[in-house]
Length: 451
Ligand SMILES: [Zn+2]
Image 1 (cartoon, rainbow, N blue to C red):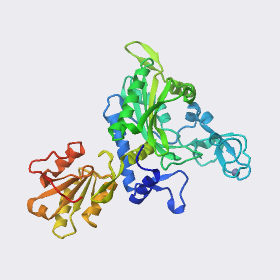
Image 2: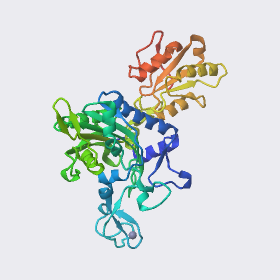
Image 3: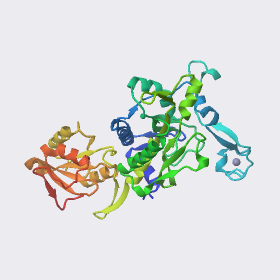
Image 4: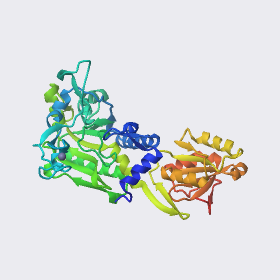
């Protein structure tokens, strides 16, 4: 399991400005969270890592960004208006409301009062489009990004002149009026998804399903999540949607137990068939080589951004003893770390500051950096460790003489000294994964350095 409990991560997130409760000064908004200065960087990095792996690194996937508000018929066709509901029971005494599958028997868990029969409650947020608030003006905040992809399938096929297999990826906000939220950002009412619909010729779907199971599992591993904290769980027959041919969850061992990070489903031709039926548009494709016409099958890897952020935070959190003091360190993958390089003059000495400012200016266009000259160097190292900054660059009095600076490695605590003119390329190489003790010309290993 991740070595840390949820309270520790919640408190770190608040203390260091990763994540705050929404509208906190008004007492919060149920199940909504705000990302602070470091959290927004981490979250953007997670989304960018996904986009790179899913879109930019592949020839067979393109992206879109669809509107959150859609024609309400979309949600009739997708089944959300009819079926996207939870059974709820009300307590006749205290009026509290519970999910029927979360209570045993017909007694209220809060007061012991009698419960009503279950009633279905739709999880979509409703609002009105236009100036009139009547039934004809009802629209929904999308409960998933996937439908924006299905309704654009033909647009993307015809404008990109692609052949199958073709994936369409999208990252964006979704909304679900969950009855019970909780476990920090794991289940919230406003959240962000990274979804991709991969359209294939029927008959090749099993092959591509396996392909995406492997790709998606490895994405988390490659970004530093320990393999023993991840698993692929196959859905039981009764968990499967009636149309789905198969579904797996990528699960992470959260403090509350194994829980879903991402679902990967073989949805067959259900979605395009439904939209063809309700829109009256032909959504089949014609394959030149075989002169066949068919409705593509679709493989859908659907991941939660916020859940991924939480898993990356939990898995990277470590406490250890360094120089007889507790050190908290986030061993985040460099691609995910909010700040890549911190620039730290040894002190606010008037001779050091101009040089430190100059060093900072020379690298900040290449990396996300932070300049910090307050308090002792030890305290500043700890602050950077706690937010996962991979490298600290220190400018000391010797730097004025030899035009060299020290780079400190977050994970090994090793330090090397390098000429300032090699700093940019050295940092770029280390951030790309080069071993820390590989030295640039003129560089040296520092021994016995304070950490
Ligand atoms: Zn009650």
